[in-house]
Image 1 (cartoon, rainbow, N blue to C red):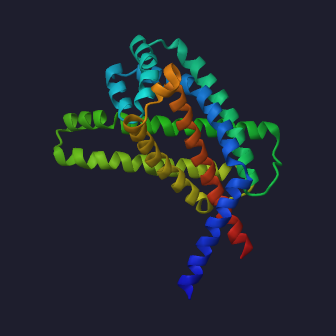
Image 2: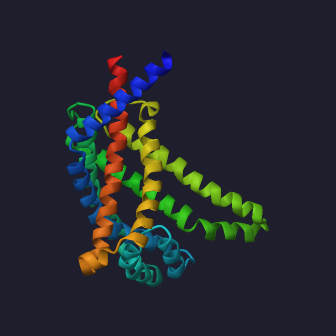
Image 3: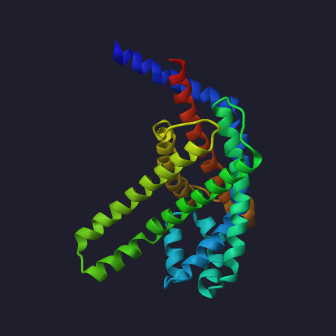
Length: 279
């Protein structure tokens, strides 16, 4: 009897979640968020590559890692920028690019705030300045996710080789390191997305309440990015359909679907919270 009741509860949660996704117009809010991310993409790329330029890592090493995690067309779109920024080491770009990236992306997080408040059926009662500070903070947090993920996934093998060489470790460490770096990325992403879901809504929430959405968005981000990259590289030819702007279309599509994942993660938390309130 308990098992049947549990099955009915999850069926009800899934039904409520689907209804909320449609009613809260997640698609439109996702488009708004992805547009802001698109505007912030190249300023943030310049910022990240300028920081990498401070190290001994060469542009070819950056591009080799980048090629393994993004669709080929997006790689071609960013290749020239990466080479110029990393090799030229123009630190004058640093302050301008980070200010531009944070400002444009924070506008997108205003859409997330609006979406999550709508998901919890609450009105925004915080002041404009406080909301702007929250949006800016979340932008910095998301940028941190990207940097950490980039370092651990793209440069993880390079870093592992350096550790092995310095400490004289063997093959067993290298295999363990390859598993550890992906696990660490997931843990960091879960923590940071949960933090975003904790602070954004105009409602007091515990980290336990926002953990399901954090887990969904983090794992969904990694799995979807891998699947989308594989699909674009092997089964689709956007250049044939869209010509020279094919790479931009791919980038926009990826950012849009990632934005949808972020919003659905918030909807999952809201649906579970409202189901608990109804008990």
